[in-house]
Amino acid sequence: MKEKYLPIGSVVILKGAKKRIMITGYAQIDMEKKDKVYDYCGCLFPQGIISTENTLLFNHDKIEKIFAIGYSDDEGKDFLEKLKETLTEENMQKMLTNVQEEPESL
Image 1 (tube, one colour):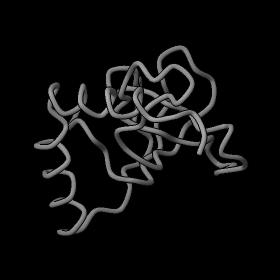
Image 2 (tube, rainbow, N blue to C red):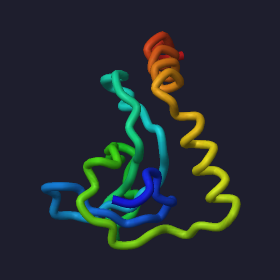
Image 3 (cartoon, rainbow, N blue to C red):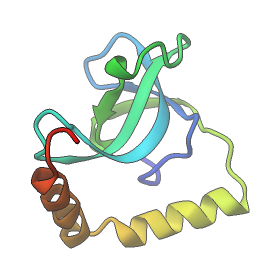
């Protein structure tokens, strides 16, 4: 599969899935489990974001097929390069530690 971290707006289908997903964000943590940083978050396509409770979290290796690549310009390419540099295993562990230590509600 092509480059990890597809642009926002890319439309994919996950292995074993029946519905397509549009990528809406990166480096998301499941706030219920707080045990993993996922490569992407997304919403059903073509429905879009209906509710924040329906946000899907998934990793790049679960993508079976790419239907469309989202818009990309120099700013977007620079952002994705910085994202790849930042999302080291060590930094992801720090993110998880910080989230796990936060109080449940303020």
